[in-house]
Length: 393
Ligand code: DNO
Image (cartoon, rainbow, N blue to C red; front, side, top):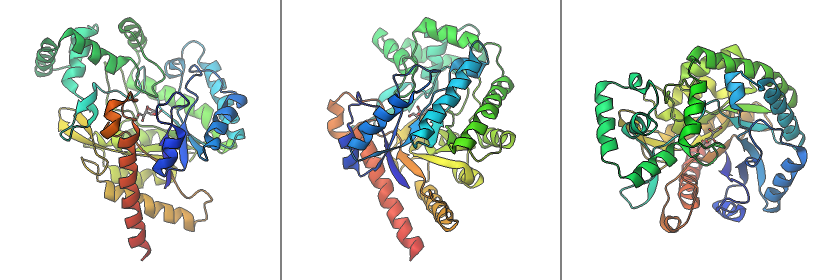
């Protein structure tokens, strides 16, 4: 695996030198200052790339080139945004960057209800609690028609949850959900969020899926020509939120996308944490089924708590069987190597991590503090080394 680390750019409290000290050699990054839908010009790409090279690291993967909401809805200037997207791919490829991670989640990117949830060992982690989400939806956002999404028991739990919140806690919960997590590119006020959701009022799962296919049908031929590996990120969490559809949740969802647009440049970011939230997602089977098109990997674990609740576990704990996943990845890499792929190693980044040790006293990007991810990377590195030695014995 090409060990990589996400870097949010010059304002990231985790510096490139910090990243070097983790032992990672590759960087996963994006031009976060460019508004969604606009072209990333070559100069801006090169400047960012040079900053990374000056630290003796290489910008291996772009995460993400975000997709404008108008493309997801196929309204307004969607065609212009698609043309711009192609131009961005062309500019990235001309700078030697050929792996792009993106997602097709409507309105919100990844979503959690708690960003600093206390763990037993004194560290903090990310947490998703479905009663907290319902409490926000029903009693803070007061979304029209929200009741139909929840059964009586869920409404009751949400109400109890809401009633126990102080006004400060209401503010924190609201911010955690809609203010925009790192990398999400977009954050909203309550009113903005309501308006965004309204746009999806009449968009069904089939509509959204079709809009994704139409986008892929336009983009993938360009990607193929440029040898750019488009790698869609699964929805996080992998189920619908706020009554609007999500379409990259399960093995069947992926099957649909890859059957309709079969090019291997229509690829996958294999994220064990996002897919792993659903018990009906068999991670190993998903890996085996889509191996050829896995161009980028996020390794992290989650612990399911029932009712859709989950927290982010340490990388080798929780519900993800990291041993069997890393084993499968190493086997796949060996296969690629034998088949004489030049780029047989798959870029992987340790995803998320607990805020721990010294980082507890620092302002960090939730999920993206240095030490928690360093712990994850080190554990995965050791696991991978042990597996490789045994396989090669
Ligand atoms: C969260 C990340 C996501 C991811 C995007 C990919 O930690 O995994 O923000 O970058 O969804 O487009």
